[in-house]
Image (cartoon, rainbow, N blue to C red; front, side, top):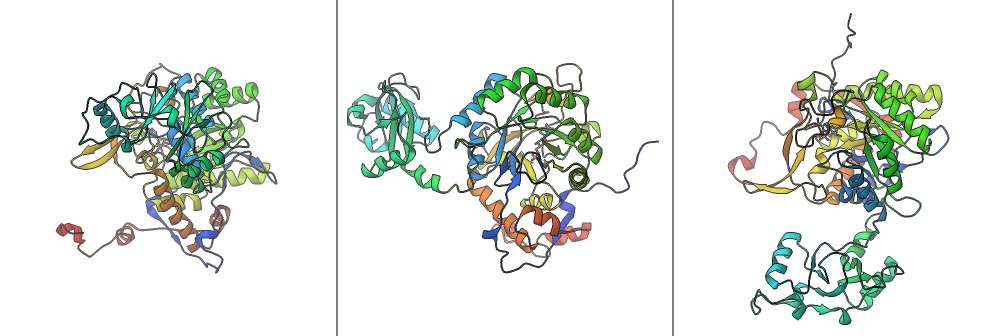
Length: 501
Ligand code: RVP
């Protein structure tokens, strides 16, 4: 006879936190959100911890190199999507590892023959008024000059005028040596010479980086940035259970700090084989997360198979239709509570702590706090990050409002069959995800800071200054359907319904 769980499974929206005593020390500024990313033995430190409990989803529409840099600056980790060629994924990892904070590659490049009209088009496209004039128009070509909006007057000049006639030529530029100039030195030069931007060139006058005055202040603002011992940003990468023998060494060579098997359902022999192969061939120092599972049994299986962290969640993702399509899954909150209880039992028994990641289904910021209170060590978020400037997708205007595109890995658009592979044909037999729009929300930094402020504030309401303390002290209640209605504004007529704000 089938096994029946005694309780229905619930999701985050059905729970609330009940405040506990907050001492006068319990203020948001004192809250630490530091959390382990990979497993560790009792009394030891994990090889990698994060400064905020957020990772970005292993998805084409979410985690590329740009997202990874932006999130590492705030203290979290992106897992670069694996549904691309090994070379392309390794190149993204390598870009993150080689990114020098404050040193940017030029994204607006022109040739000496580029016309003013073309320059204005480029400005419209990139929004960047500082353009490098290189011999071949590439970001790393021989630097011949710089054009900024101070170099031309649209009302007085013909749109056919070529850049070479009005650019500031190389001979008149203040520049520095890319190989020997530190960020501090670059910033000193910027201040001494009243520059907005300092180009860094190699010994052949080829452009390597630009350092902008505005990035100086930006750099000072990233107190929680997550870096390795060589001051490079920490980055993760997704892998699958098919081509790991080739993909893993390429990603490690590119500098990936942590890997994660990306699969919609992880309680399978394929994951065990993959974990075993990686640890045997590349050493136990290579950190690999696995998943997804939704119960204690699934956790125990992956723990014994050697997973360095374990992801929880099937069917709760905003773009996911696995539950409708296949009828598998479990309410995210119930799944998480069950798995975290098993993690704690496993820790008691073995002295090994395996972090649990709650993946998918976060709709409101408070759901994050609930997930952390229920035991998640960190979260994986797709929709949340897809809305930001840094996600890889296009920003589109629909009926006067801006949206970003967001699609599931199981959609026809992504065709990530490896994620759904159960050892059959090498193709996506049916869709498990949708293609959608999400409201555009602006820069990652601003949004993440607001979310973290809410989490810290709620933690103080619960009397907790750290995540382990939150788990220990949290008092959580299920709410009735009627009380959920009470939670929003009710019995008033919102002013915007009258067309006013
Ligand atoms: P969300 O944050 O709710 O958008 O969910 C993101 C998660 O959804 C991913 O981390 C992944 O586990 C899952 N996903 C990704 N693609 C699909 C799909 O096409 N069904 N699901």
